[in-house]
Length: 414
Image (cartoon, rainbow, N blue to C red; front, side):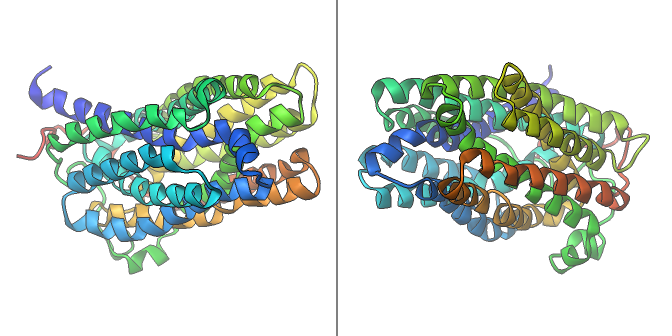
């Protein structure tokens, strides 16, 4: 490959790997959750609040980061944020109280908000519109692969070396990747966009009148409520309610997430791109169908205790994860390039505020008063709500270019 063709793929590889580390750090805590709970003598609600607090500060930081990224160097903010969150991950070694762990988790949320808000806009400017579903399929492989790696890392090393040790392993690569990203040139903003920046697509006030943006955001919020609660509580559910050892529960769920996540991320993005010439709302459609089909499968996974339980969990996880690439592609396409980071920041604030900020704590609350099985009814309801919103939102999807523009720039900015 020539440097002109190699650059976007190199940039995509570095940003995807950094995203991978981002999700390892989050899910390590889920894997060692019972060990933390035992050491600090915590209730289920207190454990759930660790994740809720992380996401609360993560979502509050995003609206401050987004406007900065629309005005200044995206690369610089990504690098500083990666160094910040990696340093805080290392500091887990000196957390010996629940309060210290809670403080560490909230500050990591601030650091990780810089990357998750900005990196998708960087990726969107690397490739043409009709390839964005597949490209985001690669970028968001980091969610299932990183999450599964966190479960496996935490489940194995946590049991053998204590719950703090896996955080050391997760911290060091972040510093190296931040250095590598520093040498990437930034692509021109919006170099492949075909839609004009109308007030609804190009201004912050216009977002309030942008139905395509709101359909994605609210559908994503309901889906994130479901996925966030399941990620936090599934290993504990398998361990406490279904009799698996903690290490086995993390191994089973980690394997499900990584295999399903890889397939779902790639297939979801490919389906969205494939259907785009025939259906302008293809990304909404793929996500809506996957959420709707996931409802009956998740019910089987929760209430069947025999041999079909684990396969049902695997199918439900696949359907939940299938919407990741299409929904993020729909989000990027719903707004113009010069407000994209701000729009993603608003989206992050809203879908976390309505989604996985409350869900772990609410599920812990229900589990404390009833059972973990009863708590899982909440994410099932959220999946149905997400599907309905996204089916309705299909009509508002913008029209995007379905063929490569031979005149579009493909090389990095100078």
